[in-house]
Length: 314
Length: 323
Image 1: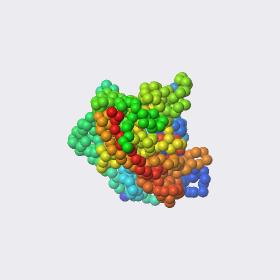
Image 2: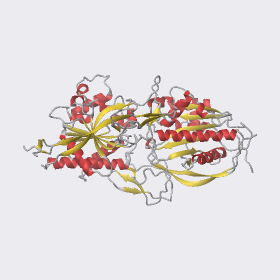
Image 3: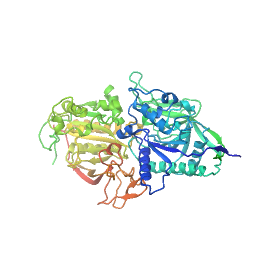
């Protein structure tokens, strides 16, 4: 099959600390910056730009200061005016858009990779917006083939780019690398090692692509967001009254069928899955989603074909 | 010789008649606002405390740091669980004092005063850790026979599930906890659980340990005699920090072989840290030691990667309520 011709990926950004308490990306970006400064080690290619996305939140080891930075990259927010009352993270989003974008323009970085952690047992999850971003799809396929220590999966948000709200949507191509489980404020060596391996593999793929190799296509399994499910809550106080059921805890990407337990209330009652369609739960018991009213999300699985790709010849 | 239990002043044990029974007990949740098992349990018991009541004793559930709980943060200005120093408790009250110091003074008024005969008999303080410590009871004294007997009772009731006992009597590493206001302070530490997350199994484990502890108090108050016994504990030796650079930034992480290995022996030559570029740093020291609080999120800022402990067997005298 004739490969799809795509422009070279000359400008690549790696971002950490978009959430200031997701420690792997923060330490990995800082380590990359240290190595690039020292220059004695070519583990990290010089053309890769490293960014600490939310330095104020990183300093305080908090997810954000005023507003979740990773919800501030819609075209609407990026084109709004900045005033004295504009939240810090919206101002920072504008700054990052100027550095890595502007989103949707020809000056934008070719590839943005944003590093995240989750408290959920999600292994390595690559998060992207559209299956038409073949660069991201190919990188995912490469990671899944090469990484054997943990499961590697692809989560597709299926949102049009102008409405896409997270940092990686600023680049022409982009994806988030979400790795868990890891508590906020903690850096686990096993998670760090896997994230470093995944990032090096992604940069390897970029190098192979840029040097002219034909990257073979194939079938890719994709999980697509369907809906979110909240905790059972007290109708007056909105306090949660149940925890994720022990049989659901840590079972991200394990198919849920009717009758499977979902929640165990503090008084001992079990709530079960009532939908007719079996779906896959993810982000089960993610710390940051309590305030967003999400106990877990439900996704469905499908297979997508991606074409071979090759660098555009000038 | 049979020992008579009484409520001795917290500064030193003494055989002296005082409160005949453990009549006033409190259960603290949310001393750290993001350790959610205690927040959820105490929140539940504040609405309906039937589960924690026992005959002959009034048990008060209490949210220790409500502002931190509201923000789901460990603390607002300063760590409440380090704030109960003599200096803080006697400081002149005023708005310029950190929130947690003012709160400590209030808690001391409600449940203390610390060190006096009016103080609560027992305070259970509910905590979570990101470390893989399972169920742990934390003691502040090796000679509090009432508490040692309670620990023994809880361990037997939990069996075959384990319950470790951490003893922190270290003159420098011991700290002024919110529970130290009571005559008999006991920490319940259950992990691993991320901050800001409520795990059902962790919640139920903590609930069960507390139930056994309250059952002990009820039996004690009814006049049951608990015969002399021994209790295996882990005594805190020293704090081990992460390797850091000149700016104080950490340069290595807990090694994968040490991660999650709380209470397992660590000997000289065993992997301890892994640098960001993959090099192993080994533990060099007398051993074996038994590490705890390995990779606790809240301790990065306290310069602690883990604490080392040594195993010790404490003797508990026979204990019976004073008739």
